Image (cartoon, rainbow, N blue to C red; front, top):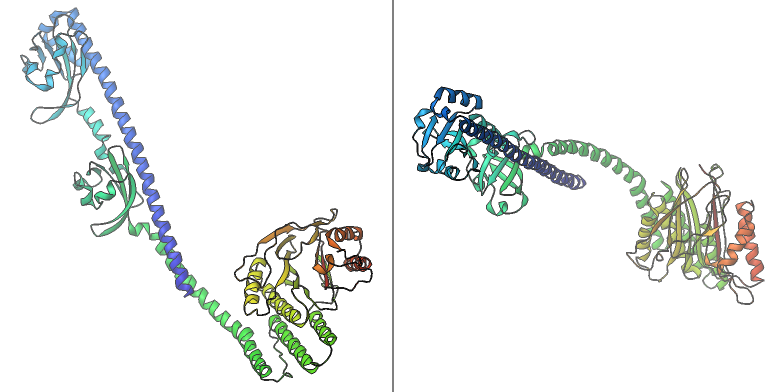
Length: 599
C-alpha cells in the first residue's frame, strides 16, 4: 500500500509537472512568434517606405528631365538610357486626357489610363501638380506577375509621369517575411509544431496541406478558440498531443507537442522509482519484520502473559521484559504498580499515613536520583530535587539523552493528591519518557501523550508539564510548555537570570485534539535553565503570604555566584524554609537546573 500510494503520488506530480513544463515551453515559443510577427510587420513597413521614397524620387526626376527637355519624348533611345539609369522596368507619359503619348515598352503607347481601376487612380495627377502616388503590388497580365507603379504630375504640361517595376525581388522579400512562412521557422522541442490561424482558418503551418483548413479540423474546438488564452489536448493522425494557444490581435497562435515527448522524463523516472521502491521496501520490510518480532512482539506477548496472571489475582507475578529500555521501564512501572497494589491491599486497614508514605515511595522511585547525572559528559551539568509534601502530590521530573547529541529535560505536576495522583503521574511519566526516546519533536510528543492520557481518564486528572530538548552541538533548545509555570533562564555566562517569556499551551490529559506550540531558544556557553513546580512559588509563611515569583528571582540572583548546581538548589530550598518559618509544606517542591558549557 505504501508503494502504491507513493508511486501514484509521484507519478501524478511528475505528470502535472511535465504538462506544465510543456505548456510553458509552448507559450514561450508563442511569445517568440508574436515578436517575429511584430518584427516582420515592421520590416515590411520599412521596406515599403524605402521603396516608396525611391520610386517617387525617380518619377519626379523623370518629370524634371522632360520639363527641361521636352524633346526627350521624341527620342526613344535617349529615354531608354534614362530608364536604365533610373533602374526601372517601364516608363509612361500621358497627355491631359490620360492617354499615354510615350511608353516603354512601346506596346502600351496609346493606352487610356482611365480604362482600368488599377491605372485610373493616377488620373488626379493631370489636375494636381502636387500629386504623388506609390501603388501597392499589382498582378499584371495573364501570368499574374507582380508589378508596382509610382506616378507624379508632369511639370511641362498637364499629364502623368509614371514609372513601373517588375517587382519580383520585392515580392520575394515580402514572401520571405510573410505570415504564411512564419510557422515553418519555429520548432517546439523535438517534434512540436506551431500554427497561426485567422478567423478560424489556418494561415501558417509547417505542412502546407493544412493551410486554409479550420481549427476544428485540426482538432481545436471552437469553444476553446474563443478564449484569449488556454490549453488543450488532441489526437491528430493517431498521435496524442498537448497544446496551448494565445490570441494576438486578429490571429490565434497555437503550438503542440507529442505526448510521448512531453512525458518522456516522467516515464523514465517512473521506472527508476519502481525499481528503487521495490528494493527499498523489500529491505525495509525484512528489517522491520525482524526488529518488530525481536523487540516488540515478543516483549508484548511476555508482558501480556504476566498481566493476565496479575489480573487473575496473582500479585506475586513479576514482569521482567528487558529487550529494550522502553520495555524495561514498562516492566519496572508495572512491577512498581503491582507492588504498590499488593502493599495497599495488605495495609487496607492501616492509617492514611501509611497510604501517603506508599504514594511518596511510588513517586520518588520513578525519579532519577544519581548525581552527577552524566559524569562522562563535559558539555552539560544537571541537578534536580523533589521534596514531597505530607499530602502527596503528583510532581515529577526526568532527564535523558535521546541520542549522543540531544538531551531531554522534563518537569511536570499532576493535579490532585494521594495514590490516584501518584498513579496518574507514573502513567504520564512513562508515556512521556517512551515518546521522548522515539526522537520526536516536543510538540508531537505532547500531542501523542495528550491523546493517550485523555483516553479513559475517568479520574478527570490533568498534568501541567514542560519539556525541552537541547541539541548539544549547537546549543539549540526546543521546548513546549503545557500549562506549566514559566522557567527562568540565563542566556549567557555574563547575563542575569530572566523569565522565559512564551505563550503556554493547554495542559495534558484534559481535552483531546489539542495542538501544542513549540518554541526555540539558543544556549551559549555558561547558559543555565531553571525549572520548578508551583510548590516553590506558592509556599506560604505564617502571615499567609505566598513566596511568589519575585522572591524566587531575587534568590536565584543572590545564589548565582559560581556555586555548584546542587548548592544553588540547596540554597533555594533553605530560603524557602526560612520564608515558611515552620509552616507545613502543602505541596511538593520540585526543582531542576541545567547548565550548558558548550560543545
